[in-house]
Image 1 (cartoon, rainbow, N blue to C red):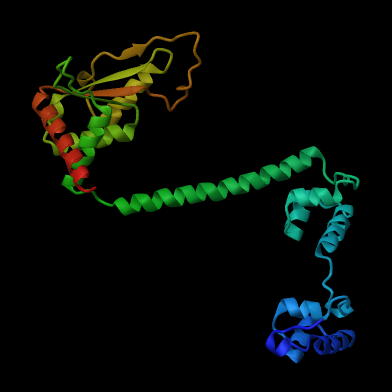
Image 2 (image 1 turned 90 degrees about the horizontal axis):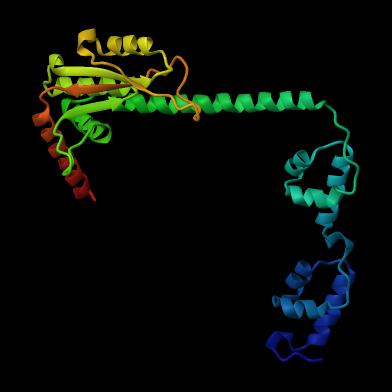
Length: 285
């Protein structure tokens, strides 16, 4: 066989030298560098039929992996531990060791459950601390509110939770209802900013009839620092025996309704300000 490509034209002489080097224990890389044959196809043809030296043979990684997986399984390791140790998937571990007997349980189910529970609780503590830290960082980032910031917050708060005028039901009045005491505090601070005298405010509690009505009334009166005479009659929600209530316990105090007397002008300012916020948001996009 002859090769007609330049320096490889004397193929048979090259092959003889390549075979000689191969039998002397040289690797393909060494033969390539010595003969200056950088074409992989020709290089492989030069040593065709000659087995590689033993020292160049790579170990069969999969066989070694299988042997190690079986060794660990026989030592009582779980699939999860073997997976982490060998860096392969659990399905690969299963294929290699599933014919072996299952290791005897070293702990009772109760002990294993207790260990798992402690691990879960430790993770929960870490997550709870992350939540607390994130919330605290966010709280600190807000800092003190300027009057303008409080004004905008209050307008958005009312438009989300307050009663609104409808074309089919004209009611230009300011009535805010919420169960969150912090929301009530912010709304009252906003009313103070807007110059609404506390004498113009009327409150009423709205609560389930099976709850601690008297306790809720005292709670809301203390929160808003208002005399009981500023409170209208409490609205009781009738209990439906077919439903299971979730709003139970000491923390359930119903909702507080805050109504501003002679509030038509304030309502118009709220509505106009809200649409101003909408237009301002549109202009940023």
